Length: 144
Ligand code: SF4
Image (cartoon, rainbow, N blue to C red; front, side, top):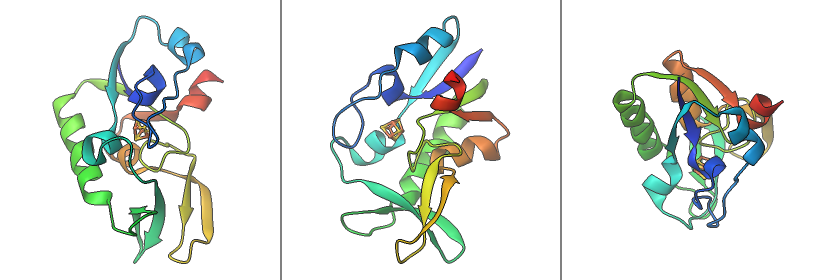
């Protein structure tokens, strides 16, 4: 089975601050699967980079830079579409919990005034997986 997985969970130092989220327990559970890593934020914005948050604006969910307030969503969406178009046989998506790009049911969503609307939102890339009918789960939920 082909599994798309957030690259930081495999030990890639692609988090905003150059760190990783390596999780041997998770990898142990995925033995025998073909793992296909992705990191939309590193691809689009490099590492290190300023953080971003999910913000609901005009009825849309966007990834907004915490440094410049710029809308960072379009390149992340494009990366996600290209990734799933290239890797058509993916059956499972495992995203890093709470990430505004990769979190499946765990990202924080704010309104334009930074009021917290939800802690169970879906990140931009995880949403693309869901839109395509790919089973998607947060890494912490997969472990448990
Ligand atoms: S959570 Fe996603 S976007 Fe963030 S570092 Fe990991 S793979 Fe990259």
